Image (cartoon, one colour):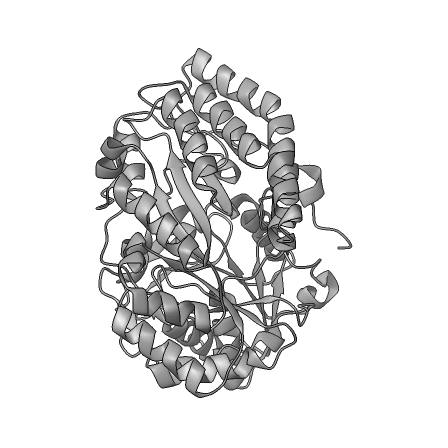
Length: 479
């Protein structure tokens, strides 16, 4: 089949969150579009969270690739169905279809499992030449008779420098002031119970060279008000490498705002903290996860509450702002755990927080565990956004987990929080507080309907799949 136009869509998130004001895309679609563009194809990337896609342009695609995580899967499936009905071949990729490829193939022609750089190129080449697909590693697909085929897994990319620098100009309607995602590594050796990074990207860290990372930074540093988000699961996984990279920024005189995900152990390296502050570190995202020692152990999080407290105080002393992330609802958590966590973060004056309900995402150990125990209430994936209770906790009800978590968020993102930041002239976090208030208010407003649905499922004993219709605002327009 002749192939010229290959377009990618990143499906829309189902609800608002405190950083909805500054969404940024996942890198996968942009990287794949860049690779195929370099091979002569006409490629575009549409990010629904950024802007309304050009549906007319999408109708002219020869292939459409749709990227999805678990919470965006219903929207991704809706898009896949609509364009498939127009005769356009559909390729699904991302964590959710990687772990549930047979589900994805109900809506798409092909599923790319795991890292897609090589698989997608081979798929396009085979479709162009009419060759059989059975030797493309990492691919799942349907035969003409409807039989599903899962080819063998593809090996993880060995040399991280081989992929091209992502071309962000391929993203349609993306402003100059956007936050730019850059990945300097993949993989994670830690085994957090609720995380799918290891089955997706492997246990071993794979690093780009410092020179390659600098190329990517230089490519975007000239943007107006450039703000880079290093999307590595742990930007300081190798502290000496991270410090060497930050020294290069200083040597080249590159002045940018940047943020990154890190672990509490950065607080034990004063030299690293100094370099972070000097190079424009705006804030760090840290998964503290819990203040309950039993829950930390349950999550396989090898840190103590004292480490959390020490990290927060040390980073504040270094004038580095903190976005703290906590996962509530572990088997050793109860209502008081949630309430105490809110008091803890308010007392230590963390700049911003996310209280997330433990969510059994496909591909994670907790998904397997809760499935075996029959504790998953439903599989309406749009509610698997860490802001809905979707399983039965041990020491409280699902209703209590849901409402207490939202109430704790509401107490943190109070008018007092907003006014406090305004008086300190910290306008960014004042605005974050306003968005936090709004998103929590919306979540509380929608909770009545959702909790009623939960009650019906639990009361009737229906531990089975439910598929709540997509909200009307998610309908495709102008088609």
